[in-house]
Length: 87
Image (tube, rainbow, N blue to C red):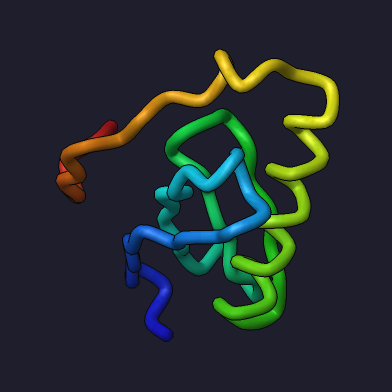
């Protein structure tokens, strides 16, 4: 995976978020792959994309142990962009 590679995909889990889908992005940051949930402000990482996603699922489930399901934001449209002209 290249350093600037970004992968976005919906991830459906039966046990996660009361049967709601989790939308996430993964990207490489140094030697790790980071998985960022777009429904709630939670992220995790791993050595592979699969490990990062599995770790994210656990992190989101732990997040919702202390939160109501009202914290969940539905993501219905996803666009990914990249800017190279930042100062």
